[in-house]
Every structure is written in C-alpha cells, then in structure tokens.
Amino acid sequence: MFEAVVMLCAGLAGPDCRAALVPGYEAETRAECVAALAARPVAGASCGAAGEALEMTEVAPGVFVHRGAVAEPDAQNRGDVANLGFVIGETAVAVIDSGSAAWIGEALWRAIRARTDLPVAYLVLTHVHPDHVLGARVFAGAETVAHAGLQNALAERQQTYLDRFAELIGAPAFLGTELPEVEREVADRAELDLGGRVLELRAWPLAHSGTDLTVLDVETGTLFAGDLVTDGHLPPLDGSLRGWQRVLGDLTAIAARRVVPGHGGPVLDWPGGAAPVERYLGVLARDTAAAVASGARLAEAVPHIAEEEAGRWQLFELFNPRNATVAFTELEWE
Image 1 (cartoon, rainbow, N blue to C red):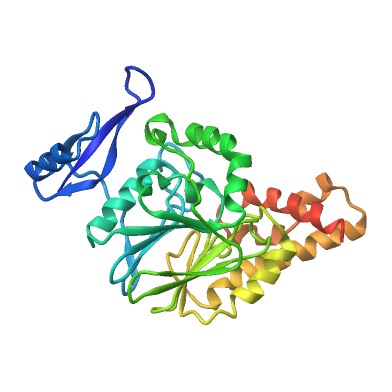
Image 2: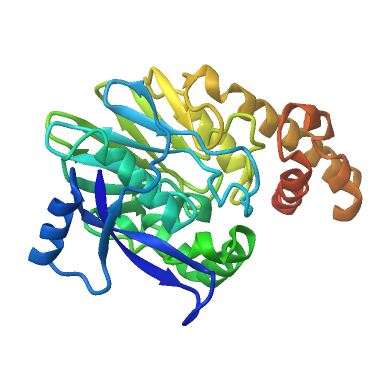
C-alpha cells in the first residue's frame, strides 16, 4: 500500500520532523497515489510506502479495539496509552477515541483502511482527557461527537494539555497534534446510524470526569465505557466520587455483553468487568469519609486513603494521591 504524506518539522531545519499522513490518497501502487495527488494536489505532499498501523483486536464482529499501554505517556511509548476502537457498519465507520497525538490517529486510520474503504463518518470522544482526544486531526472529514461539556472543558485546559503532552511524548512524535472541534454535542442520548448498525450514545452526569460519554454497539452488545471502567490502570478521578458511584450503578444496568474499558482489557465481561472499579471507589469513599469524620487534615489523610488497594492496580502511586485529594475535598462538604 502507498499513501500521501507531508513533512512536518518543529523548526525550519533539524531532526525534529515526521511524515504526517494526508488521508484519502491510499492506493495499491505508487503510481495510483501519484495520480490521485495530481488530480487533487496537496502542497508539499508526496507518495510513499504506507506507515505503521495500530494493532487491533476484533472483539466482536465488526468491532475493533486497540489496547494502549497501561503506563504514563513518554518518549518510549509515544503516548500510546489509551484504548481506541472503531465499528464498521454497512455504509460507514465510527471511531471511538483517537489517542494522545496525531501519529496515533494516523496509525488508527491505516488500521481502518486495512479492513474497509467505507467512509469514516463519525469520531466519538468518550471524555476530555488528552490521551483519548489529541489524535483527532486525521479524522477532520468525520463528524466529531462528544459530551455537551467537552468543548468548554478542552478550551479551559487546552494549553496545559498541549504543553504537557509535547513534553512527555517528545516533539517528533507530537508534531501536528491539535485539539478537536466538537460538531455534535450530546446532552443526554443520541444514536448514530452506520447503515444497518446503530450506536447508542449516552452522556453521563459528573462522574470520572464532567464529560463522560459511552457508546453501545447494539448489534453485538459491545459497550465502550471510556474511563468510567478501567482494567489494571487505577481509575483516575477527575470529577465526583459519589457521582461516579451512582453512574456505575446505572451503567451496569445496561444490557451489554462485553465492555471495552478506557485502559487495559481490551475487552471484559459485563457487568462483572466493572466490579474492580466499584470496589476501589468504595474503599476510596470509606477511607475518605473516615478521615473527614476523624478531623484529619488533607495532607495527613491522603497517604493512608485506599492504601489497601495499592497492590491491585498499576500507576497507583501516581493517581491515588490525586484521587484521595479530590475525594477528600468533595466529602468534607457532605
């Protein structure tokens, strides 16, 4: 396979450059790619052998998932730390989350093109966190769908996200990365028709974040839960502890067959796959409430809250102090 690319560089010259995919010019031969570029020119574009595609697992018929590393983004993993997916219908494709850098979105595009030439009609973003949304650039031709609060949340955090991930991943891998623009906001529920295949979208109240959106493929009973459900990766609390517990109660009532968590997996049984997150949040709530009731100060309480969970999760030392701080601040006002 061949594709069109343009070179992106951090400066006028130097080693910090990468070949960025120009979607829509994929061809079996170089000559066909060159002919397509001649018919629809793109400044600075040239044709070459296709770049890397993400590894995907078909977790149900027509439902594909990429499992990101359970790790913090860094130069070694180039930010590939979140689960991403796509669903193929009879007439269109929907992508669920796009990763933390433009190169990941491009590699996801290639994985789609290896399986179908149907148009990518929708890009669905499950929540605001940068490891799930920053790879959206290559899907500019698709309608971007997200929780009604996501665009404002991105606007508030945009520079922090871009600066932080450029530093973590490194300039070469991060080049060309941009924030997405939400085109359809979901305040409650919505449906996407992929041609003979319907995706049910549901926006949730404040929980793991203030922007959580789930996607249910009705045909196969596959639920994309974003970070409302994680596997191995400690659940990161960026919203409301009590809200998350309530949402999980409603979420587990959904009649799905399997769930794709935001991290880990890449697929879990349902509703059993939510049990570890429910347990952790219960311990977090219990210990935080006890610390507040005892009159402990935040700095004194945080190291001891949910410490019994330490051996059960990766990234515990990184995220649990943050979770305990958010939970303490919330529960001390109950």
